[in-house]
Amino acid sequence: METAIILSQTFFYFVFSVMLIITGVFFSIATYHLVSIAKELEAISRDFRNLTDETQEGIRHIIERLSKLPILSFLLKRQKSRGVETKKGGGKK
Image (cartoon, rainbow, N blue to C red; front, side, top):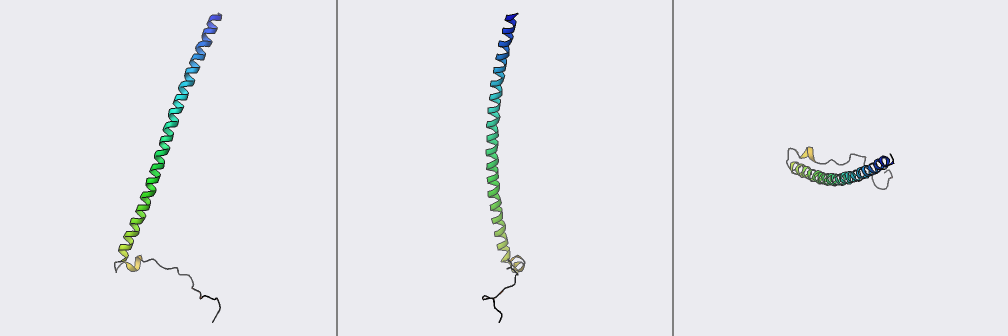
């Protein structure tokens, strides 16, 4: 009877140890893949940001070229602020 209990405890400890090691290995693999996914997302984000900057420059270039056309120049020119202009000195004359 004691031999069966000692054998079952030994088997339990062995199985538990193996499962603990396997769980650690799976956790390490999952962590490695999560880090690589995060690096890829960062690279994609950086590329998207660069693409956005390039697209904005392209749009500005197109608008500048279109603004040189006499027909569209009045539509595409940047308008100055329409605020009330005051004279320097602030006094009435």
